Image (cartoon, rainbow, N blue to C red):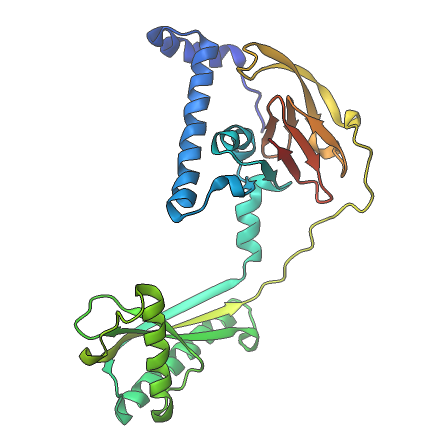
Length: 303
């Protein structure tokens, strides 16, 4: 069952650390909160700035149980203009897993060098057929009609004397004497795309090390409920009450409205500071932010 946070015990747990640091309990808690936010901001920078993307050009998409509490704070640190929080934030990963389709893969090795011999071509095609039969049986055991499964075949190719191979998507599972050159050309184009123009070494020869087949079954995606009529901006019908919350600025506790997410409607406008209590998470809007509830009951926070 759900348990309420015991404020007195939480303060007691922080008190020992606070005394060591020479701070009061509130400053210590806020310090821990800020460290967590800075760590999250650094992780976002790692997957954005280090890849050549400026976070200030993007909306911060937040999900997970803790994300909606922290994202408006580290979003400001990143310089993003807004944060988007799905209504199903706390189960977003699970929702994606259940609606993302089912994929099974098989790999088999059989080194071969181009140009492929007639025997080599026959062996490779038997490998693909064997993998397809095995994948079809697996889907059938899981109650899925194999006739509705999409199969994709890959050959892992490289220049000889190299250690790393590249997966090349084949147009069909059958390799023939008359499509060998086309397969080699696809590999060379992919190699140039990954490593740069004229970086290939065709004089060394080209070889295949292994083969992969993926079977993909596209699962039905449920329709997420959408509100058609827009409510007035005033969210007072969803107000649960008010409680004092600490936001550091202006340096004291603020009387903060607390809203019940189940009563929020499309069109409601939330002016920070605001707390929104939801089934699996808590959305916190700091002072000087505004949240807008969209037709899917997601919340977009303008920072």
